[in-house]
Image (cartoon, rainbow over all chains, first blue to last red; front, side):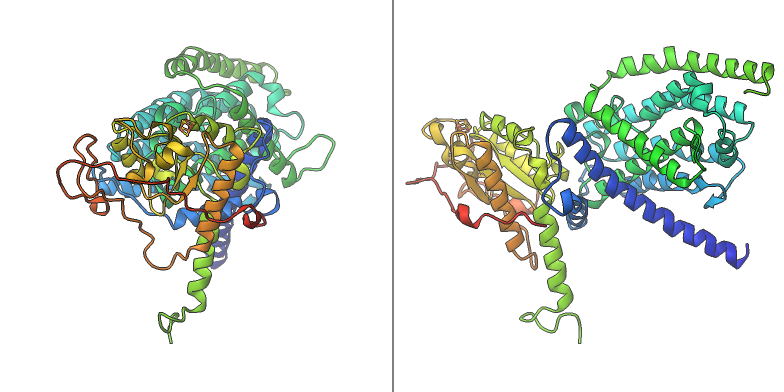
Amino acid sequence: MSAAMWIHALLWLVGLLLLIAVVTVMGVWWERKFIGHLQRRRGPLHHGFHGLLQLPADMVKMISKEDIVPDSADPWLFQIGPLMVVVPAIAAMAALMFAPGFGLLDMNHGLFYIFAFQTLLPLGFAVIGWSCASKFTLIGALRAAAQLISYEIPMLLAALGVVVAAGSMRLTDIINAQAGVWYIFKEPLGFAIFGIAVLAEMNRTPFDLPEAESELVAGYQTEYSGMKFGFVQLAEYSVLFTGSYLVSALFLGGWNMPFLPASPLWLLLKIVACMTMTMWFRGTFPRLRVDSLMSLSWKWLLPIALVNIMAVAALALALPGIY
Amino acid sequence: MGVVDDAEQPGFITTTLDKLLRWGRSRSMWPVNAGIACCSLEMMTTGAARYDFDRFGIMFRSSPRQADVMIVPGPITKKMAPIVQRVYNQMAEPRWVIAMGSCAISGGTFVDSYNVLPGAETILPVDIYIPGCPPRPEALLYGCLQLKKLISETSTIGSSRKPMYVPPVLPEEWPLELLGEYDALEAGAVWVQPERDSPPVTPLGDAESAPEDEL
Ligand code: SF4
């Protein structure tokens, strides 16, 4: 690699880390504010302009809090647990493209890369839950593992429909293929499956079983105090960002906008809209039971996703100009 | 020349960090989500739409590991005492305790009962007392703002650990757990209910000196 490439990579690394920090801070603030207004409250209000300094205050407090390692916990696994969630969540963001040619790595199999790293997350959750030797974390981790694995398959199949239609796994190609019609209109079924599965992948309501507050205290992160808990939150919001990016890039046209020139601004707007949708769900929907969640995934989403991908393949063969 | 020349004159960096920590800790007090008796209904109301704890960055966390403040909303029975104490011990330092309602201050209505402790301070180091039966949500908010004032006016330099309240002798009726070096109790015979004339209310300021809400 030449020096220029190293500098490019370094700049992007710093930029992505900054992006994650900004996404987490603004995401948590916006979530508390938005859900507050949904419940006819005001949300954070008094610290900074409309509570904008609330998250910095939370972070200062978290950094200065005591770091508890329970006696019964496995010390090694307990320490590396948060890293095992943060690292894949950040690594998955390396393949995101924000405009044609504007991204860290424009891989020709970028979609595959993102899914590969997101699949590593359940492993981190399992390590966290297992290492604490506590009932709540263990149940939360097992739920996370079962849920993420069962939703992975419909999600990948729904994404495969897009790949078949676009003929490429490169994110730039997929988004450019939507310069005319977005895939949400060509594959509405795939969009519905992908949306549901990505919600489960991000552990958001109605699929927030791994950290169900009313049953499991705080789920797999129960035993973490201070900044380790902060790291787990960081990973959750990076996953939320990546998931919203995937929905906007695969189905909502990415940086394309009808009748307007393509711009990264549209992509950003769509990501924010998707994140707000998940927060809206959190404010409105109850939580699913474990068994109904499993049956929804295996008995409904998986067969429909298979039908969807066959239909898309048949249409792509029959109408090569349109699909 | 170091950052700190001597203990009397702390250097620039030390005081700034102290201010930052006090600012952060006082602006983000997360109470542990634990209700004991009827006062907890007022506590829930305070978190809900009309009063809204979240305006001040006060957000209930279910896990005591991630909480900073323990609101004791009600009488602590002798059977409940080890559990309340365990929840307090599970919280990460720095931590604070608010005694909410006359029951948590002194035992209140149940002070003569055979199975109720005379106030939360029998087993916990209480920082703020909120009188009332039950205190209105405004009173709870005011108490939390007083705690915010207390935190932002207490220096973080030096040890912030508050030792557990140690009864003179280990009570046999409601065994306290020995969970760590900071709450060591000495084994003894019978626990005696302490004599008390009036509930220990420590006023921390009046309504005029309520903390400003800017920043
Ligand atoms: S102070 Fe009154 S309202 Fe509060 S717990 Fe005691 S009896 Fe119930």
